[in-house]
Amino acid sequence: MRSRPSDYELIAPGKLASVLELIGREPGGWLPIAGGTEIMVQYGAGKLTAQKLVSIWNLPELRFIDRTPEELRIGAGCTYTDLRNDPVVNHEFPLLASGASWTGSLANQNRGTLGGNIRNASPAADSLPALLAYDAELLLVSTRGERKLPYLDFHTGYKQTRLMAHELIQAVCLKRKFSGYANFARKVGPRNAQAISKVCMAALAKISGRRIEDLRIAVGSMAPVPLRLQQTERVLIGCEWNRESARAARRALQSEVAPIDDIRSTSAYRIAVAGNLLEEFLNGLIPNEPAEHHGNS
Amino acid sequence: MSGDAPGASQRKVSFTVNGKLRRVLVYPMQRLIDVLRNELGLTGTKEGCGEGECGSCSVLLNGDLVNSCLIPILQVEGASVCTIEGVAKDGMHPVQQAFLQCGGAQCGICTPGMILASIRLLQLHPNPSMEQIREGLGGNLCRCTGYTRIFHAVQEAAKAGTAEELQQLLVVADDKP
Image (cartoon, rainbow over all chains, first blue to last red; front, side, top):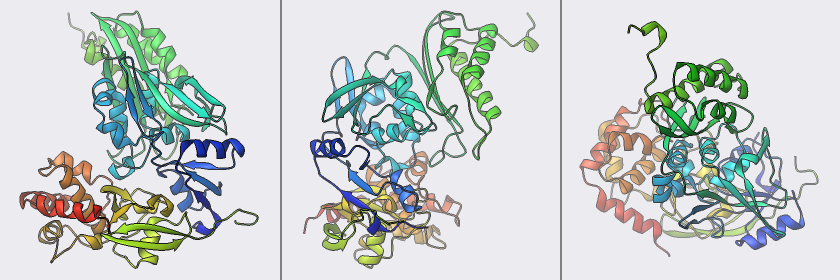
């Protein structure tokens, strides 16, 4: 059943301060809409419960990419196309560039925003594991001021976040400290464009010989929230990569994920593939010992 | 579902379509595709899925490829839209000709979106690789052709050197009345 346009109010104050004033005055009363790639789908299907919307599309205060020597600050209103076109994102945060390139289609990337994706909080979002791997911080803003929050703490449950009703996400802050890391980004889905992932992974590693000095692994579609695999990381950091640590890593991975069976995949498949992806990444950096049944020396 | 809902009143929204300034009296959440088809009679833009998956409703908004089913008309205020009706000038556009020659169209529902996506692709990549073609058209679904003939059409259009016509289209799209 289609929505009736006359049932919905939409206003476009055109300034961030006006939007913040509005949502500060009536917290929860107005739903911010940026590129509409999620909200307009619900609206088209007659499932949008909010009936008062405020446009934050293309607000200059939300659509910027600022760089300092230490930090990249990405406005929440940047589109996926903006991310893909940014040289620093491409060179220093390739996991984010990959995630952006997997998101929807080019037409969706021209409208979908990073902040919208974060707020929408889908556990299957392709670019959110990258933000976990890079230790992103979110800059939240309201009429009461600003606050920073580690992105790791942002999602509290399925589609639940720490964003307050009077706040907007203004920017995503990334420390420029990962250029020495090897990176790995994979999406497993039935089609490149327009397919929601069965599993996606964003990972970073620092290797010395056969030893894993540092490791950051994050996955999508493996839990109710985009998930950083901190137990798996702890099992491997400081260890040599070999058959034994690979087995321990798989056990840790399985213990900290909670994927579901749904129309796109099964829990068992997702766990097996996530383990395979991790091994693919580390085997590519540190060739693993031959498996037992191939051993002949 | 309205009940005690706030609802909205109609208001005037102005934007440029295929080089002409249009002024419409609409509800702010009316979708761009509905305004194009129902208010302006531009029925070349097709609706397939209505949820941004199929690309049938593709138009160029300020030069960028977008799904017009996902855009509330209020967000189009002051913008410039190019639809399939704005593509042919004196006779068919070279990309349209290439689709015709290569059998890149069958039932026709996806064709307007495919043409606009191809035009945008060729603006960004005048000599696209097959990978670039696949990505550029990745958001446009076709249930008839199996895509191969469409990809050939884009290659043919690129060979024909459509850069000049494409540039003209951009100028028209950005033209202020």
